[in-house]
Length: 346
Image 1 (cartoon, rainbow, N blue to C red):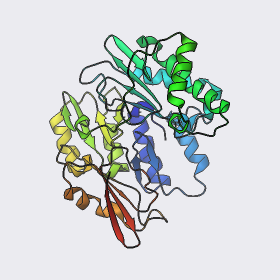
Image 2: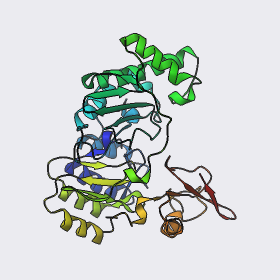
Image 3: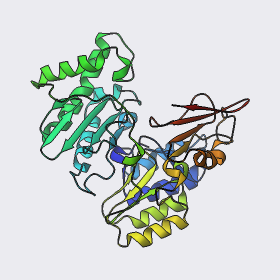
């Protein structure tokens, strides 16, 4: 389920809890794109699941669902800087309103950053940065009200460029020279000047991943990105007006808490990570055995012990060589094989 900007309401959290309990394995998985997955669905789940997601407002367009991949700085507007929720909503609506953009692949990624660099450096195809008095999209300076228009123009230009070169590329980086060519095309179409250097795509360091109490807001870590239905219901109880926000590092931001210390104590009792000492800040794992037929080990059971071997490093465990769900920020890559775990430093 795509959650543009990671935004999710109390009602949507409850809907996911119910659907996970009734149709899945009782858990929801947070992804590195701040989306949510349900697993272990039965063969006949498609129709009732689709109806349940649509009723909860989680499926506004069947045609565009796979392309609604929009990251946003999770703390934007909460600890200073501009709020990004209206921009996220406008971009999502713009995507769904353009039939042609349904041709984008499910890998194509948008990012809206508030200047702190937490999502701008996660390898998105189209990156917007909004700060007080300045905005840019993929290196083109623009006024803040025009950001969404420019992001959609980049998406359209990618489809044009891909067609012109007879390519089936999923992402801008898959087109040789595509990034510069597409930027020049958009600049010419909209009469803009490339005035901002475009940084190389790097992963966001752990320093940009706060956890615990931030002002009157709480940032919690889901163990291995997995939340039981009871935890989802508890999160829904904590939402007070503004939606919760799923983070690309598999956490949950709860804005405007009535009693942040008490909430964090309760969260810790429920198994959430609540401070920087938590292994869940820096370790992830794929489904592994027994949930995946390709997996060669129960990587979820082994994940916490591996995290303790490399304190302060970002560790990912894969049950096989496909490396499903491996974050771009991975520093220690642990892969199960027929002969045991293989370890590589990235």
